[in-house]
Length: 497
Length: 103
Image (tube, rainbow over all chains, first blue to last red; front, side, top):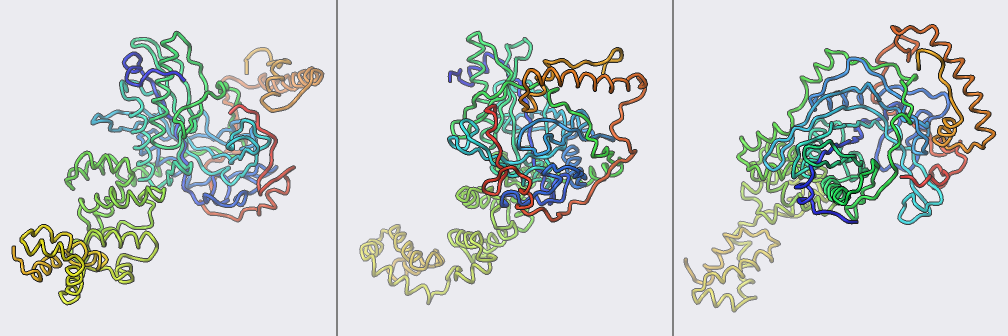
């Protein structure tokens, strides 16, 4: 593929981007039936006549899904419909056994909102076109082709556990004026949206498990000219890839346009491994879906007073909480942005609320816990440790019962499922040893084991005591009070500072 | 639907719909179905004779709103039950013919 470097492309062309984000709601049951929604269940164990599209089965709307969608709309400053209907979106593909997806067409639950995001110190307002409710599709496994792709497959296997899980689609209006940073804006938007959704508690927003997925639209035009033809890149399933997908599409389109070529309106597929997209089908006309009002579901007319009460009960927006972190806790903008990007804002706040200092909470969640999460391949907030437990460990450090190394061991014990911090401390015998009697044996052994270092210290090179302190720490599995060990060593060696 | 006259459906449109529906229709079937569908459309179009511009299209015959259920999990079918109507199955999944290479 041939491309023009990102910065150069954006010096020549103006980008217009648009994002469609699909979010699986975290309801216990499906959108139109009582089947469970558990991720990773054995294939076709969570299906029934409704979600299998068997003749005569009738759907009934999940009220929590309606409530969650309205709360999302309210958090995104949308107008909430006073009356709307579901629609049948007809298409023939085995991922929906009904041969249509129940969705919303020209009457979405929520319209005309916005989300403000911070990019490189600037506030960018992303206009929201609509938020509507639909159902997810089944999962296809393509057999016989290379690497499970459709191309070259002999047949496909379908699991309908996911079919019918409530899915919210959040569509932006075309976003103009992102200048030299459309990719960064796109990533910041999806990141902020994920935090808003997480704050609402409506979805687990796990991009790696597909509960949040993005389609990215990009077009380029010469300054002052009409918008260009857009492409839609599907399959963008990580925050990093949102940025990469916009970037590579800007670079690709700029090359085509500069060479005098034409951008085709098409669906492209993003490949996580290469960071590039490949051309898919050219877009079917919207009318081909033959949308019409769903006759098996009656209209939804959200009560105005109910919507007002949902609005009043919305949690604080992440941006507001972030400002509080910065102002009240004295954290830097950088820290705050790092926390947003790592998705740990809520747990940091909860850790502070549980009694830890802001600095301690920051250090844990951006440090050791971030590394642990990375190693385990999960998001830090999903680690099996609660903010209260982190605060408990921080308190043990503050009181002098644990040092930094021991505290990490305690946290690792909690992560390994060994119980609460207090239980791990007790079970592993992790506490700083301050007892002189208990330490003196280790001190004697350290001196005996390294006579060279001991002699240097006796000769006045006090810094050499560090090696001896190290072996005392090692002998006590990190549990010695380092200051006391040092003092004892110097005393035994007859040196005073 | 147009106000005047009646909608018509031609052979080409039937062929297009057949393609979308993954139905393989030969020429004689297209001719026959196009003719039949055109007659059906003509019959349905008689409704436009009585519908005035101020009557909104009806999507629901019953004046009901907000029929919902609480978010409670109910028992699902067993995989064996779910797959019992499938023409073909493999590894607990519905086995379907190769999907057209268009995605």
